[in-house]
Length: 359
Image (cartoon, rainbow, N blue to C red; front, side, top):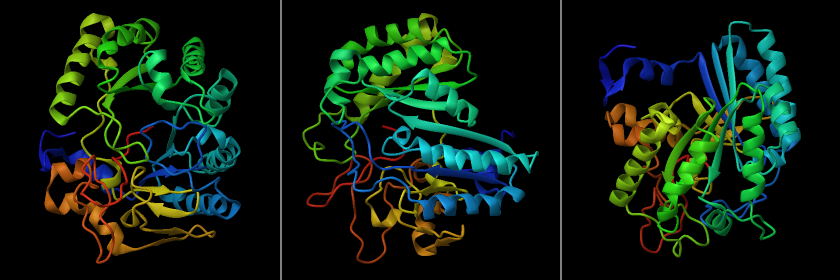
């Protein structure tokens, strides 16, 4: 990597990576259903499990692309992806067979999961499928977490998730676990003690890191009622909490900071929904501007250039802000509604969400 900056402070190497035809980043939604009903969730759960024609299309797309790739990364998202493990296994086994025919390729895979079903046996199965990175959300200590990350049946979820996290720690699996800890006005006072517990239980293990993220107005039925931190409050709170982690034995490498370029800004990153619709952003799922095309059963991608172009505009406008989240200020085709963008809800308009944040 050079010290030169090519676009808006983005290193040359990152620019080349984003535009390389030899790199492919796919985000796959094996289902858009979920066993949770988190109070701040933006999804409507109107779509079910990925059907066989879409599964076949994903496989054939990868058959076409793998011979020309040197890097392939697949991210599993949802809904809750682990309630559709058969789809994950089917596609992953196909990918592993394909990568064995291309020994020069680097293949990595991750899952964004609520971890309710991530018991040791499941973790081992996923590991055998080369899924070795996790992002798992927690909303604070049990009494607070269970008020917001609620099961579909109304029950709490903390104890099951914590047990599964301890199971991951007890394993010898070569994995990376990002504990995404949500920060809200309701849990802020409890965060120092909770992060101390996180540090004690997990951060001495080199496989675990923490990502602190403020919950925003991401859309959904409870959006207007849910209290969130303002931008300046959020920055200050997260800065202080990160210092707490780093200053008490965690080490600076224990706090994870995402890169400055959103995956949705990268030309070689695509989202494939359970329906076969192709998009760029995992949050604005109901936004027409995020429907940029369709995956056909034969593996062909039919993309709409007029919809794709606005997601990539940060590169031509030389804008680090747009590259960081192209959903903000996304240009619209004539007649398309303007949905919510990163916590900014225009009066009287419907809502969508915040850029890929996990759940």
